[in-house]
Amino acid sequence: MAWEAVIGLEVHVQLNTKTKIFCSCRNEFGADPNTNVCPVCLGFPGVLPVFNEKVLESAVKVGLALNCHIASYSKFDRKNYFYPDLPKAYQISQYDMPIAEDGYIDIVLEDGVKRIGIKRVHMEEDAGKLIHGQGVSFVDYNRTGVPLLEIVSEPDMRSPEEAYAYLVSLKQIIRYLGVSDCDMEKGSLRCDANISVRKKGEDSFGTKTEIKNLNSFKGVRAALEYEIKRHISLIEAGEKVVQETRLWDASRQITQGMRSKEEAHDYRYFPDPDLLPLVVDKEYVERCRSSLPEMPSAREARLKSQYNITDYDAMVICQEKDWADYFEEAVKSVRNPKKCANLMITMLFEQLNERQVDIKDVNVPADYIGRLVDLWDEGKVNNVAAKQVLIEMLDTGKAPERIVEEKGLLQVSDESKLEEFAREAIEKNPKVVDDYRSGKRNAVMFLVGQVMKLSRGKANPQKVRELLVRLIETQ
Ligand SMILES: [Zn+2]
Image (cartoon, rainbow, N blue to C red; front, side, top):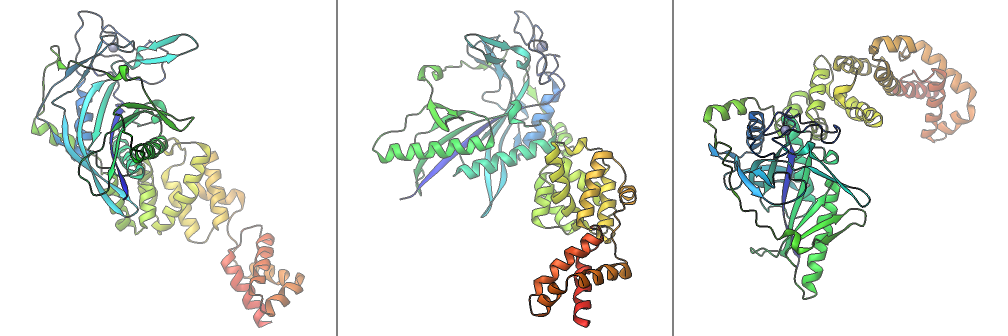
């Protein structure tokens, strides 16, 4: 009988508010250690936290984008534990009354769309960061008090691929909202996975393990694959899965159990007496809702119908909000939107990827891309030249028409000039012409290449081919 996996994910997202959640220290990544700290986030005795309302706004937006119910009344609780990265010896979090609950996101899989439930979204503060050296450990409290959202899914995923697709969608939605960059390398998105296996068709759950120390989406997928195999082989050997937390070792591609003592926690949650309960009225929620951008799936559907581009084009372009914004700006005055999508996907994204540049840092106005698309569409430049112009635009920021002019890239479609080149190619290659006449129709491509050379790459290859065939067959 076949096995199936039951997977739930807990994702922590660092919010990009200007300041921390309960004090006015700057919330920035990469500052010198222990420079963005104050008595509040260092947990000095007698200090009082003041809640940053921007955190609430981000949390409500994320809750709405994930189709959650927003709580009209929620509160902060203290989660008590002792660890060197937590100077107060408690973390302010939300325990039994989170800001948002009962939502979902629809993920796109090969065989269709699947709805994954969101159990809850809650706000909390981050702990500091421990840095382990040789024989010593350091702690950086810059991260202490940085606002986090914890997003907990229902155990609705049935394979590592579904978990991967869920993470991709979740990240895309949060990036569209602009409340976090969700960069796993910088730790602004972190993920823990709960996993168990059962026979297909069963309703009850098997014993689960929790996997921590996952530092990429691919790592999540690989760790889940490993853990599923481990569970199945234990059960099939007549042994039991032990409920425990395990760490993913990316270099060895295995999970390993943590010592059980480390996870024997009793957090003694209780409401934080220094913070007022949060009362969120309907108007506030509606204000947040009306400020939401168009979400990725809705935008994909609109782009497809508005510009008549393919599913694939719309999917790629809408991966990032900045890309979709740029596309819509570029396509405004373009005659052939499909060509605009082509140029962005096959040429522009490739260049940006090679240069490791973000589209919002590019010095080429979207309008220039649109004008280049028109030049290409009108046949004034061919594919090769279009790419050359694009590269030159990215290097210099010059307008496309000027580059075409300066580099002499205007496509030769002047019939008499092309005919002159074609006749020259035919005269110089009688053997190839014979081959063509004897039925080797592909031989003409050699002649096309010769004409392209003579025109220094500026001829329209399609036209050249037609012309050559006509000349040879009428000679
Ligand atoms: Zn502070």
